[in-house]
Length: 634
Image 1 (tube, rainbow, N blue to C red):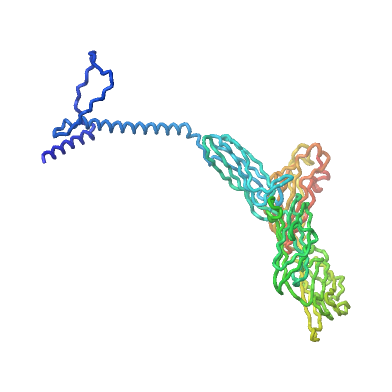
Image 2: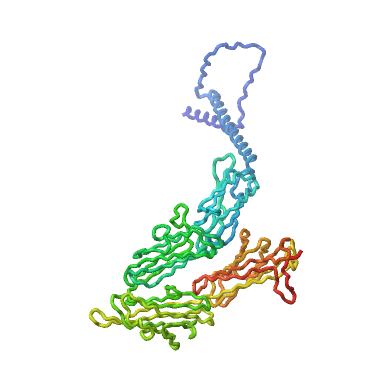
């Protein structure tokens, strides 16, 4: 037990010396240096093997081993301390030299600007500004633009635009790079689209690629560049040839090229022929060019098969073909359908209004409508004693409205009647024969709100069946005459400041008051546009309902007046200024070019368009204004 107790005491003493640095150490006698020479070996010799201390019960033999281990720990602590110090010095130096040169995407600003509306088929002008607000330049900068579907490049040979990459190279610290872009936009009216812009860049000393996205430019297509109208019978007999008239009209202010019409035929429809040669197959037609206001018409003939009361729909799409495949539409601009209901009547009865067989026609106010009823014997038997009656109704009907009919008009019942007494051909109609009955109607102009005339045609006849039993045959068809609204547009200018009469190379300010007046039907999505001459400046001062926009590229002003109620009006006032040139001395320059109003008749569904003459600097003559006050002087 004594040995164990002694060993424990030695261990405790050793622990105290290791962890108590303040303990007084045993003093060692220093070696004294003298001039006495010492013998040193001149050849290599193996060093003597040190004797290992053996721990005995006495404490002094343990001191050499403990001192060596103590020094080892101190060397390790000193080594790690030096490493930590060097690391802190390196980090501090990097922060000192490069801390202010760090690059952040938040310091890169990308501004995308452009108009909020653009007409379909018109050029969209875009301005992109890239500003590097970092303290160091960015390298290999590339602007990436994603265009909406249907966008095409501008120029003589336009191509589809999808994603465009523009190299900006290096953008210095604090530098702003402005990039103008342009594209021709196609799409359906009121469609909302956007252009997306992003920046790809690198930084010096790194192979990594970084990106910065900009807020997209959102805009709306104010009007479709083309409209499509389909005319056909709505009620047909199975197996009979039908004609479908397709009319494509340009609403664009520029020439449209390579427009494609594509038809989608339903089951049971068999294409016969067309008055225009198809571009490909039997359902596509190409319009090489379409001038502003011009129309293109193709009539498709085919037969529709099916059971009685079956419905068939032929879809027509007009749009821009793809560059990769010119037989496929890349963008649809407008759509229309021909809807059929299959009937199998004993009497073929057709109502034509102004040669329109759709059963509904839209007339301008005061315009007469010519009508024709065609009665056809579709049977293999002769029919006898046919009688046809046309019953008229509607708020635009008046007794003097009916004239030049080959039937008998009874004003008390507003009915026109045809029978063998008025037309001998109705007494006997052979198989396949047709009889034409005519009339003319002028809607009452005194009716101002939704003027309408409804037409109901009824026919009856008889035949003798194979069993020699008489059978009564009947048929009916209806139609409608709608009178569209008559909108008007007026404008007047008023002098505000500056020389009057205007003086060359001097600025004069004016206000232009534009008044849009509506007729008897509500006018929807009303848009008034006009352009400014080169020496007229848009002051961006407006008042009135709706929104105003100015395109500095085309110099066009667009007033989106919205809806105008029946018999209502919308008034706007805009500010402009003019600085006449010396060459205009003695002339009366134009302030505002001709104005155009376009809107949709909510009742008839037709497009209403009217124009007003250009406005000059000549003020209306009154007590305070003399004639010739708009002529430019020196």
